[in-house]
Amino acid sequence: MNILYFDTTQDWIQVLIGLHQPKSPFQILAEQTKTTPKESSYKLVEMIRIVLEMANIKKPDLIVVPTGPGSFTGIRITVTTGRDLAQLWKIPVFGIDSLEAYLVGMPNEDRERKTSLLCLDGKQGKYYTKYINDYVFSESFDLTPESIELKITNTEWTPNNWYYTGNLPKFYPETATKIEATKLNLSSILEYSLEQYFKSEQNKNDYLSLLPNYIRGTYVDHK
Image (cartoon, rainbow, N blue to C red; front, top):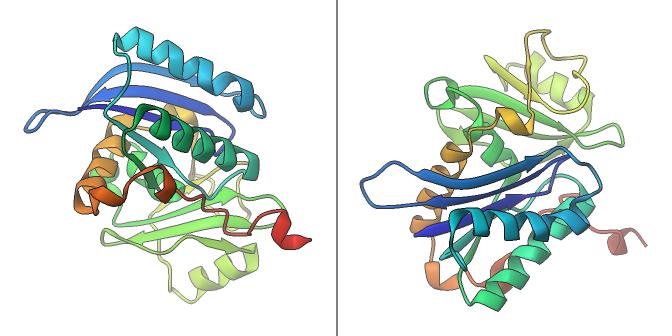
């Protein structure tokens, strides 16, 4: 099974083609990564074309994409492109929570993710936040720094791994790890996504089922 994965929900564009074979390690056939904020609207499709050509395949068997939270425009581009290509190619498309994907994709996370906190800079003075404890993910939250600090102070969250994007949050230790596109283990993200895909009702993973996770709503909601 050839899988196409792409992500523009943050300040980067990642596109890869991977090969999944039962009882074999996941294999990356082609990959493109660019840290190019606000350029995904015209670069994503060309990067997809390039990785398909590099992998020497005409179309994948499955599309996997993060659906947010993250940049409003970036989520819209990722989800819309996923829906369009799935409809064009008549193949399934599967969405995964962006925060969950990044936690899984951090190096050595299989051994160390028992208590991890991830805060993505959501602008507007808030963070998109997810916590994992003993391999159980919390839901994705949209929280103020004060709300996060309170959870830590009250020992509701007791992370020994700290991850973030943007500037280092004031309530984070100096040793925290900044998430960057080049630091993510894409094989781990795809292997985890496939596990979730095979557990899902696969007949419902068509282009109509792929929905964005904006958390804060859309611009229309605020009008």
